[in-house]
Figure 1 (cartoon, rainbow, N blue to C red):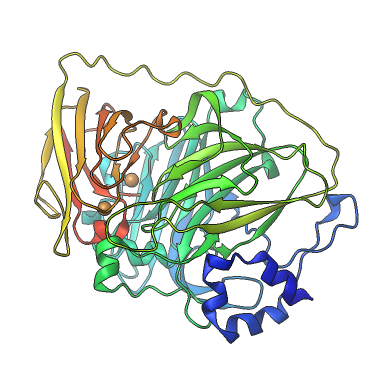
Figure 2 (figure 1 turned 90 degrees about the vertical axis):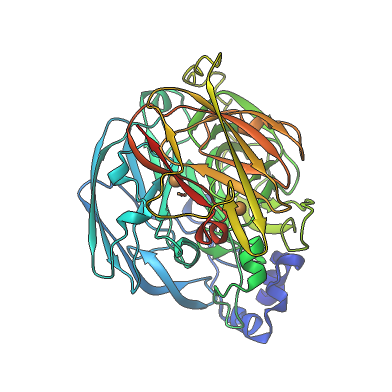
Length: 485
Ligand code: C2O
Ligand code: CU
Ligand code: CU
């Protein structure tokens, strides 16, 4: 009976059923968790694993240790070798306020070199986790910077050259959340209704343990898995009360693009993008999220009956290009509704103003072409070299960058040290989507798309990176240095 419940909850296309008798055998032992003290009735226990929530800490004065360890990948007992920040997967959620000074010590307990990058945060270049700053096994790196970002959902992950893919895939990433006076004043859901969701795909071996063994083909399209994971667990559940929730969603996959939607197609309210809150909440019923992109959404469960279940899914979509599993449907997690009193909360009507985009008249333009051919991934024909400066940008001058994907593979392009605005998209989907209108540090270029962005480096001089956030592409050299001077 338990087993039937489990099978019902497993999406047919997730690949779990193909994992063989070991996985299915193991699920006979799974423990189940009830709806908890606040469910208010005798709702049946759910099969599968309850969503894991990493502990939240202020990063200042802390030591962040990366190490090899064992992680559980479900409450069926499956556990395997992983890389962990601290003791958990995801790593601890760092939560700070705009203006805080943060001093964090990174300790490398891995058998390989590493360094940590604070993705989306605007920091001096010596605190940015550039691969030239990699420290060897046993080494440490001291970070010291002042948080200058708006309230929003940022994240951290390793950035050693050639090893970002395996290290991140094997478990190293965490959330970095910034609050400010604006976000305090909006009456957004807080506490256990403010929930970070790290969404990833993984490939499992016959024991149910994630594996990372890229083939030549994987190095071309990126390492795709066929099982969806949220906060380190396959298809977990979360009990939700009949009210609004704020979900901070991060696509932490190496290469997979998700077209996120709720299983009944209900709309949700977008309130934030990579660089924090947007100006006005927007209702929508799906969001296409490439690797490293984030959205913050409000989801309303106040009209659901007790015991109802809604799934968070990735809908199927067509990519074109070499046939791969990119675009397959994937079930990610489910929300189970408790018997709490319904409490409808209207989403805020106004959100903080975004910084006014710089005047675009007469700004300088640069063009960067992302090409994947014959197993190479290059920008403007060149692959990454640690100390070569590929572009020079004057501090404080806005520029328009034209990003060209001249390949049949998606490239999620990421820029360090500045949140940018997306101006236009030509080719491919030919539009800037509602979830791309806020501040962004990563923009998804589907095959043959051309995107123009307005960048503005105004905080720090120094050496920063632009790269594809498909981590196999990045590790293969689809990355370049630019110097803000
Ligand atoms: Cu999220 Cu340069 O990386
Ligand atoms: Cu980054
Ligand atoms: Cu790429």
